[in-house]
Length: 487
Ligand code: AMP
Picture 1 (cartoon, rainbow, N blue to C red):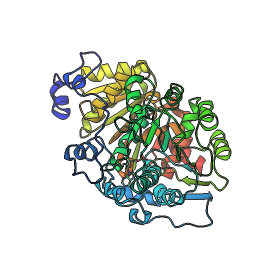
Picture 2: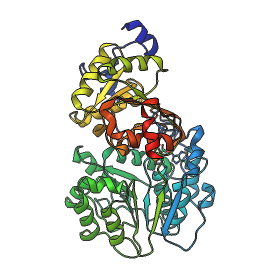
Picture 3: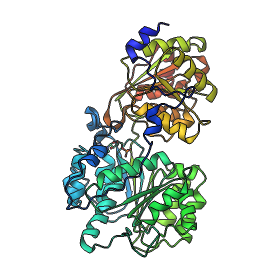
Picture 4: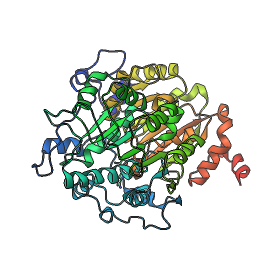
């Protein structure tokens, strides 16, 4: 392997390159991975160009791609709720607060996605909602926009903020909206999205999550907030320490509810719902989003939502979209390394996510590629949180555009703008496969997924073939025997 060839394609190695084997580079220690943003300007304030650039020009943000409109072909079904309602055809119809509409424009959102078209009118008219929608479908805006718009409209009318101004007697947060989610990564994503939608408004969001120091988060809570975004464990902790009161909560969102419950947080959520100071009257507006509808999620909706709650099912995105070009190639185990290197040298340099099946393999492959001068980094469950965040940041800003990860580490991370997903080791579960390839072609952008297949993977072959056919992809010769089986 020729160093020049790799460097010619992927760029020369610089002292700035971050790899676990070396010292942390200067950029990693200079730039905090995540910073609190306190500069929330009032509606009448002049534009804050620095903040605007930070909020809307972020390199790592997924931009709606050319094929975003394909999303509108996705199937939506509904049960419960009103007898009839009119799905949105444009954001202007939603009766949002003008500041929210301006910020939607700053985000360059042109048309609402299917989940937004349906969920927004239902939520604006106050229905509780259980929606089956995955990350990548635009679900965050589907619940954030109505909630934020309602808070803002009320704030403009009553000037009754839950933010504690300096000198205020209150020292705890009493949010109007509580958004509970399973991971800090999702929390950061929703927090950032909230900041974008509430720019030039007095609405203040705060994010708290486990694994990080409590002190800084407590300081933020003490200043009060309108929107609290929290992981369940840290929320409980903050409530027990008296840093959060739920008596002002009007909007309660459980995002990725299936994963919250999978992670064993059902008792915590029930405690928040039942035995806290949360007002459980008609005034509480509840919404749950989940990629699947397991029994526990349904039970929770039945137990806690209003009787006329609405269930929406938004078709599988990623699984059915034809935006992802799926290539399955036959590669024997002993040939995988060589094939991967050829692949990396044959594509234009772009963010590439490589899935392997074990932590050891991730370390090993990372070493192999790094020693061949590829700008790579790896991510797996044995890395500390700080290392994981650095690795993601290095990937996101393009310092390490090749990321080798185990599926466990990649689950739930919103890794953006990935142009190529490589299944170096194919998984056994088809949902897992869909989840992995769904890291590319987000928000209507095109993407490529290359899968190394050999006889060890025969377990998944029938389902994989069915999916390829369903997504109008080429079925390779060695899988053709499974086509008839599916017919
Ligand atoms: P989500 O499913 O909420 O994770 O959203 C996936 C990505 O799509 C995010 O980067 C959003 O900013 C983007 N997005 C959501 N709604 C729209 C829209 N209506 N138009 C363009 N991009 C959108």
